[in-house]
Image 1 (cartoon, rainbow, N blue to C red):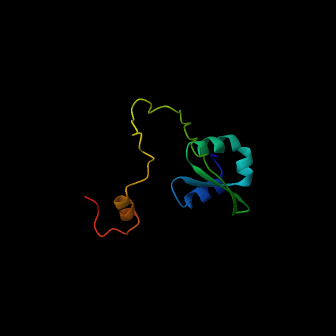
Image 2: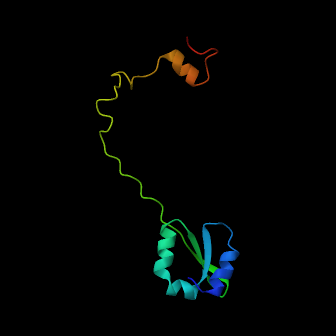
Image 3: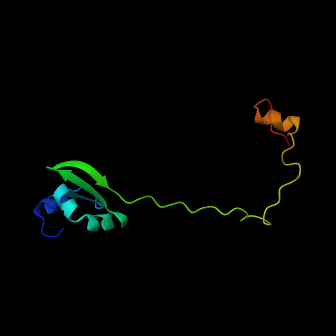
Length: 102
């Protein structure tokens, strides 16, 4: 985008160090460069006749897929894990106990 007075003047007015404004004409001419800049983390605002119309931003990082079984053999769960709680503990959870169980 070197040598473009519109883009340069708009860049001087940008709101944050990671946002640039460019004209629609410049965006069409330099789309590949703008996409590379956006992928690197820069936010590009595309304006038509000086009015912002669109924003080119980087895609969010793709989450890493979980692989089941990563904790296998490292965690032990008691056989009575799902059993009902004793009455005094259940009362404490329900706010019915005066004092926490000892």
